[in-house]
Image (tube, rainbow, N blue to C red; front, side, top):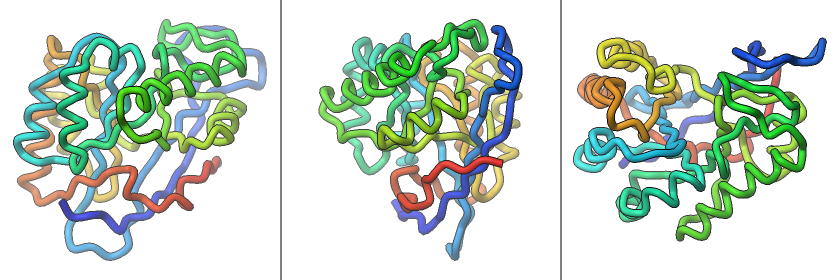
Length: 248
């Protein structure tokens, strides 16, 4: 695998949560992440997959292994406990898979007592810390290196929780393309979204929904990008100094 010389450009956009009351003047942040390239001879994208809970989608995992495609996998402690065999496959291919933190129990890392997309947020700074640290500890106990990136459930945060997460030593992982709509999209639309990727995009999708049609679209979409000559890079290969939080 060719290592990227890309730099990271982090831009954070404001987004209103899908549900739950928020005090006036408080809004949620949804970070957007892109790769800012220097000088390489092929277009690059970063594939990032959330493993929230439930099972593993072997359509995706097996394709990544067989075709030697690199991907960053954000796992929860809940998913790790239920899927040791799939995790063993990932650990057996450290050149392909980067394991990062998706939290302990898949709750939004927001200190406000709200619900986001129907999921109750952590609700306090202490609970945010427990969610972030619990996920990281589970990864370490499972035999992987300490994660350096964190992506919370729903990928939405408050300004306070983002600062808190960074103070804990993690970079917050956004994305520029929502590849599968939380694994709710059909195969054709998912493949279309992957096809829309351009040089420098960071794509989010899910690797824990084997019974949904989105997984079929993910496989087709990744293969399309490979045929078009894209390189697949890992977040860990990006310069650490470019992982600082920024807002606008």
